[in-house]
Length: 216
Image 1 (cartoon, helix red, strand yellow):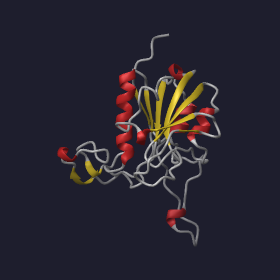
Image 2 (cartoon, helix red, strand yellow):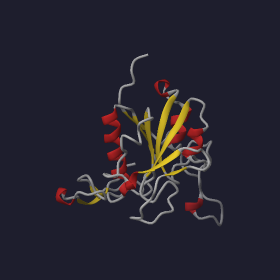
Image 3 (tube, one colour):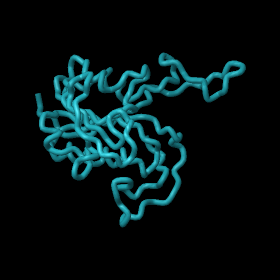
Image 4 (tube, one colour):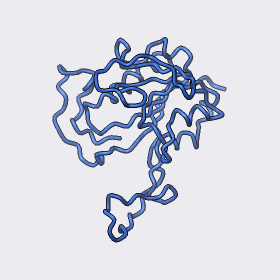
């Protein structure tokens, strides 16, 4: 087998072309109508697409997972559990962004490393790392780095910076980096706001993109 080449794998969250949404039943607000998982309008999160068609080159690999409480499938099952019990993957490290692996820490709060009580996997705090990205120690046993964090479609969301720094760390170690894509909750149809002035570059804004970027 050829050596695994470092790569960015972006897994689309839309499995098929959406079908027209039916009119809501009497008394039910339109926003409450949700397509069933089996319908043509269903959106499959990247975690489902990834595990359903796991690339052969990643089978048997040791996984480092960057996620929090937003990393779930349509049934609400966390990525952590899905990957931990997958027969062809081995979860060896969890990397927590700002607000922690469960999203229950306030902004700016220092988060210590810990062990996940359910899986026994070590949780590393990216927010406490020197540059807030994965360190060589965190990735020492990792063969592939997987990212699944929901953000809001805004430039100042720190998860965008976490992804960028993690991609750089994966490239430095020469391991694949997999993005499990998710829909833009603000719709993704409007791009607006001023571009970031490079002199104000920081962890809450790394790139000269609009305040509302319109991307997944």
